[in-house]
Image (cartoon, rainbow, N blue to C red):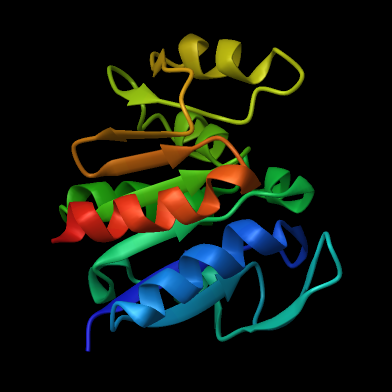
Length: 171
């Protein structure tokens, strides 16, 4: 069965941005593998808990049909994380689907993947869209934006639509 990798923060991942797409992926028949900075228990910002089966340094993007970065307050630890960047860049280089929701599109921007691409991001403070633009992306103020094989979403209220769009792009 085809596998989708979901990358979450060890502490403070956004529960809905992880849980809703995961349910959609599993219902569509995909196996979901969870990764974080380290293997082991991860705690959601809303109190959820899950296990990361892989540490980032053990991830090989080629093993997955899609790699998804969930957001949440804890996701900022990946903004300048070389392993997160490596995984994102490998995902694009291998022609796989790359997704990011909420604050996580900034990880893709910092990895220099979004130059010339349309993308969205959580912009609650009015500054995150400017960061995307500074890295060469075209900010689109929508819940979910698809540009080729890159899918971005702006937050928990878009989590279901985000999951469905990723499935649509894969098919």
